[in-house]
Length: 115
Length: 113
Image 1: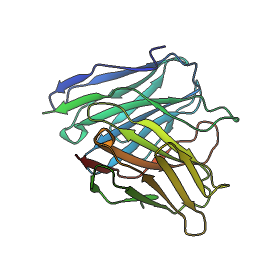
Image 2: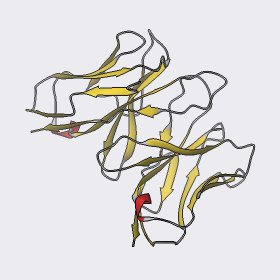
Image 3: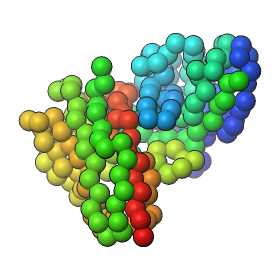
Image 4: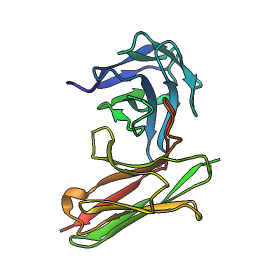
């Protein structure tokens, strides 16, 4: 099992460029999440997908869009990148069964710099 | 409004000492309280978690203490080791399918040898 994988690992964009961050999990998890991590700010939820076919906004959704492509994949798109979106982005997933703790498994992150 | 407040922001402890990190929450509907550990360049990983029906949970050198009436919980690391040097995040959520975690801002722990 690879767990949660993210591509790319690093990316540098110019202001106004667009890009899609990819996330996939092989644990047959139902729920998937996108977070951003900034120094001193902790992990802030951007969007999440409680189950295949559904997506919801988190704390900081502005400037982002998501697609739950199938049960395995959840992508995050920046349509017009801004320097304020310079951050480390983490994808996470959880089985979200009623009998288990809500343990989230995180990917290794994508470090994005917007110039 | 920050729903989970974590302190201190940074902590330096000598090898063998006790590290204590505190968190406070506001939403009384929260019923799942995990702690995540993150090493530089890596994603966070679950360290230990507690539900409010118990006041303490211990796993090895790591203990969560939970005070439901005060809406506070804390992580204690006994016999702290240099390998424990990492960033620690507390979090809270309702234990329902698909519910998102609300994270504290993190504590950077350095254990000096």
